Length: 105
Image (cartoon, rainbow, N blue to C red; front, side, top):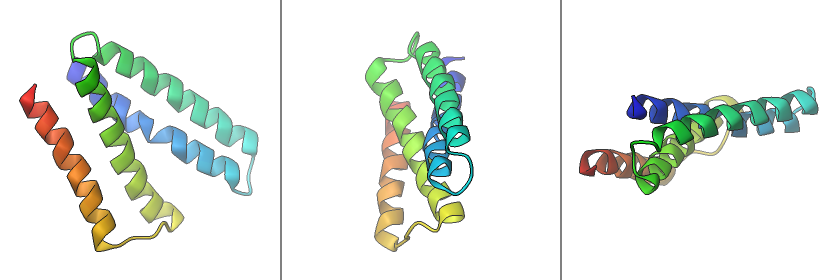
């Protein structure tokens, strides 16, 4: 179950940078900040649950890897962030590092 918690923690980690980006856009700044805080709380709680059985360093690296990769992709798809082959290769290296950590556990 800890690995499920960690996967969900990583996915919800994506929500808080999106909330902060929303706060910079035209709509309600307060709503964006509230969304960011909500996702931080959920993600942190799920990470805490995952660390009961997964070593802290492994859990943290996987959590941030999922969050960084997901945020990178959402930034490209929805916010027009720049893209290049080297940027995609960098994210691929993050994902490969996460996979190695999972199987080295």
